[in-house]
Length: 112
Length: 115
Image 1: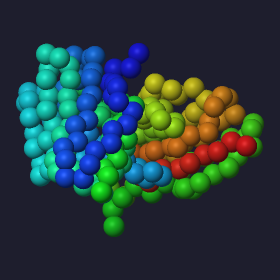
Image 2: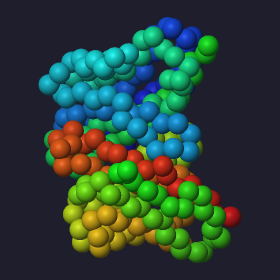
Image 3: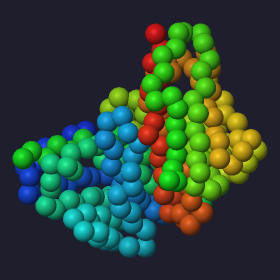
């Protein structure tokens, strides 16, 4: 049973436009949500996170929105750049913070 | 430079052989983790350790073993009992100030191919 789901395996966006990556979760005990970016044959790198007590967190071109009632979060990248092309993983941790549960990832392709 | 070092980066193994993947960190992090990534799939937790000489099974521990004799080191052994070992293996660690958020720092990964 997947507790964190990313239903879109891939997304293609034109450079300069907005990229919106979505993530759904089922476990109401999740307390923190994170986005990681991963290039092929490399480890994931942390991008941005949000606490369950907030509904928005912004860091430069990246904004994460959390809708607790819908158990849904999204990552907005604006403007999108070709260097943003990568696989993006949504992850969630419970209050103990012992482990992260990851979604299946969304491959973002930003076309010049 | 502080970081997480995984070795080898690429490894080939014949069926029936055990293989050990190394993970070393000099970040002074207490907690360490092993994840597995399969093509087109997310990361799945194999084992984690929050302190030296202690470790816990993750979601897919069958066919794997670990040890945590030193804070800096968390090697993963892929045994012959693992039915489908070909995958990309990622080691991670967590700093104390990220306990509440769960944020992890990852190594570069090791790609294991069983021939």
